[in-house]
Amino acid sequence: MSETFDVIVIGSGPGGYVCAIRAAQLGMKVACVEKRATLGGTCLNIGCIPSKALLQSSENFHETMHSWKDHGILVEGVKLDLDRMQDRKAEVVSANVKGVEFLFSKNKITWLKGAGRIVGPGKVDVAGVVYDAKNIVIATGSESVPLPGVEVDEDRIVTSTGALELEEVPGHLVVIGGGVIGLELGSVWRRLGAKVTVVEFLDRIVPGMDLEVAKTFQRVLAKQGFAFKLSTKVIGATRDDSGVTLSLEPVKGGAPETLRADVVLLAIGRRAYTEGLGLAEAGVETDPRGRIKTDTHFATNIPGIFAIGDVIAGPMLAHKAEDEGVALAEILAGQAGHVNYAAIPGIVYTWPEVASVGETEETLKEAGTTYNVGKFPFTANGRARAMGSTDGFVKILADKATDRLLGAHIVGPDAGALIAEIVTAIEFGASAEDVARICHAHPTLSEAVKEAALAADGRALHI
Ligand code: FAD
Ligand code: NAI
Image (cartoon, rainbow, N blue to C red):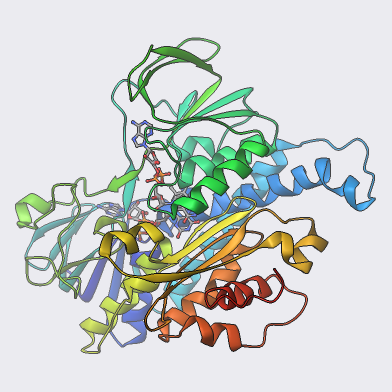
């Protein structure tokens, strides 16, 4: 007889595994289907965690090579041991994925190993066995978008997955796509010595982010040695024994050109992954971009089938998937689960970091909302000077009439940690003045946030 669960979650990424844990905490009998050999999804295995491990290691290497001298620390004979760096990354991933396995056993969640397929109302097939579920949650995540003419082999032409596994530092890494993946992984290999060229279709990098921040970010990366070819599209790639020749075409007209690379990283976005799920047979509707359509309660058009995370609309971020997992589990338990999409931060973990929450100047202008801008540069922050990390600024956007915080954008040291204060303030409906009147410890980078909040009312103290 087949086993019956209150909830079967398909996919164990941050959306799926967090939903499973919360549902189990709320007293439900839960199973989670995962076809990968380890739990944790893209994020823990081939995404957030391994990329941050390599970002940390490569930053340590770069600092030792280039910045310590400035502090009066002279180090000779510094060498890169890439094998050890990669082994360390694998150890970090392993500790994290085993952590999820421990949490599953602690919360009595059954891991159904194999690919899940919906084979009827409330029925999921895993490796030839059909399990019954009162509720099915699809959390199957995303995969990288292919580019016609550029065939990925995960050796010379790689996605983020291959770019995390390179066994030697490429002489020239060409990144197709000036988005988050391209700039984070481009930074890793640039710091380890590669020449890095970013080829971007649009006339700017990191589309969707505040334009002024994007321009400053690009300038800082150029100072670090990144080369940019904006408004340029890649129309083909030819691989030979020693590398790849890319054919480029300017978007706004002009002569085509070629670009030689040792390794090409294709990072032009990610798309919902639903292969083999049996969606069409189950009658589950998707949108034109292949994402599963849901209502505000994560319900699909088929009763008893829900979806969360990268496979539905919204930013493809681990913490967005996690919050949806918690909200859905609470809704299934009859509680009022909710996600505030206006207060989801986005961070690029380069150095300096870039962090953003809420509206940008561009979205406010488009909506016709009048706003005040408060800006404060890290060159005027004592702690940033002491750190030797003064690139960038904090920018706060507040409603002109009410002073309510609408958005914040930071390019600078530890921007990812600094943005948390503004996310909290937005969540509580605070004004710029509320943030400005909070006592911020001295000397900290957070004083730049306070000063930017003061600047929104034209009364910054240190500029
Ligand atoms: P996923 O994490 O993609 O998990 C889906 C899981 O479902 C996978 O394990 C897959 O094997 C499994 N699955 C799929 N189909 C089936 C099936 N039929 N049966 C069984 N199992 C199935 N986000 C951040 O917020 N911060 C970051 O720093 C960050 N860095 C990133 C770096 C990289 C290189 C990449 C690629 C992504 C990064 N992301 C980051 C994005 C983040 O990884 C995703 O937003 C997040 O993993 C989405 O979670 P999810 O649960 O929706 O899906
Ligand atoms: P992205 O959407 O961030 O950037 C893709 C870039 O490629 C865009 O600038 C786009 O204009 C450009 N592009 C599209 N087609 C192109 C073409 N044919 N030629 C040249 N350029 C082209 O996508 P990316 O970097 O692949 O990352 C996918 C997602 O993964 C992100 O959107 C994010 O949600 C998630 N992620 C999050 C991270 C974080 O939170 N720190 C880190 C890495 C990934």
